[in-house]
Length: 303
Image (tube, rainbow, N blue to C red; front, side, top):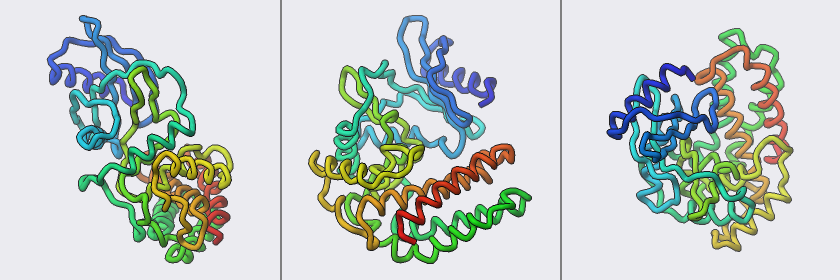
């Protein structure tokens, strides 16, 4: 992101927080967002997080989470300038250790028990069914821009998934259905001296909690239904609903969750390509990822 814009965001945050200019230390920075630790002259610190659309409403999601009792960093101040979000967050310090599967299962139980918030977007059965069609719309837009031309295999896969979606999306509202973190990974679970906190609520929504559980082990490796089944059983042992293990859409819970999570990721990657990133130079990378995930979707959803 543009350094001048983040400098303006920080300056405005300091004014809102009645703080002098702070010293900045980069923690993690991506193309569309970043995290820094800022230190004020009195030695106090805050986390300065900034993001552009579509991640620019995280302050609202974090405030909702705190109001409803979800362990998350406190938002002290936030500003919006030219479509960018800047926040001062509670500095949780460095984690004492990495989060493991048991931590993830326990955190998911707390998250999914929280009552739903009306301000969050909703992904229900109809929304799942629409994902392949939405992805096809993105593909059409990309081709009209003379991009993604050699992708007949992607179109055919999405057509197949769209035809099966009515059946395979069934059971979307079966418990756990409610808060979905959507970036639920070990790196988003901070284990500190004072317990755990969930980070990165920029894309939180109301929907099938199994999508969170399917995302925990990431998407870089091949999907592993057996491993996810063990994680689902740990989730139930930690107090999660036994319905998490129930068959849905004619599939075992773990295959349903992994398949729809991959499909959700495909639609997101394709929307990024045409809307948020919109950089033809990134097309080969995105096409490769989309092809790999679609192969997984076809197998997992037994299309």
